[in-house]
Image 1 (cartoon, rainbow, N blue to C red):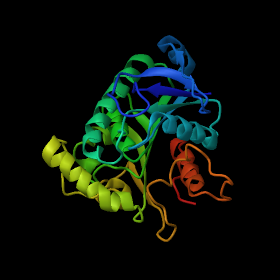
Image 2: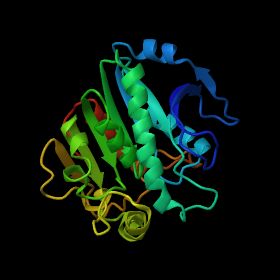
Image 3: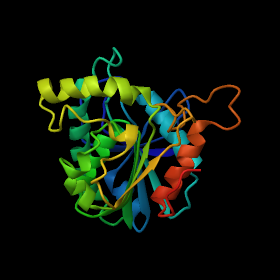
Image 4: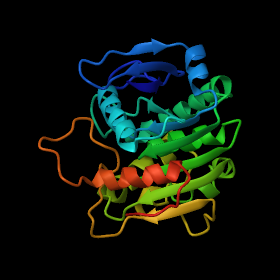
Length: 279
């Protein structure tokens, strides 16, 4: 069973809602078993919590499958407690909703921080992993967290490359270490992100610049000093936007050396405080 913080009410689309805790094994048909806040709080007491947040255009069943596979691949020791974070960053008609989803990411991050501040006070630590637009959820949550987050790992971040020296300075100050995975071969961030972000900024009131590149394309701007550690994936390896988290449904036959395996190995090192390097 993987434990999830659920911030959505529907498999596809819907509004952001305050988190509830559920257990689910990731195998269809999915069955969500409610967990009380008191039980979740007791479970994390004295443990290092890791929250993993999926990105844009991920229906709930796909998020469950991918995040459950991520928990298994990370293979964390028992002192860690993994939670997948499910939020409504998708719509019935894919892609066209992207400009609106930044607002959902912000709301989800704030709801997540409020829940953690109220219920996870006895956790030894709270660290985060994110993919794509889940990076906005992560940064918003950490910016509003009542305690420092020792380890952050932002993969293929669909946020502006100057975000941690502009609107998310507070998240940067509240983090012990921020590891950023980026790839210049990510065509989604290279081609689609600028257009979607421009609409979000200019027409929908997002609070960043419409002229910046994505954090997950070339990493943060040079003035984003430590605790940010940027790891550009070497060019020529062909890392696209979907090559960071395990797929929700494993391909048959499985590839011998899937790209996501290397990304997950990096994430494990990042959130457990080991040296940050790509291998």
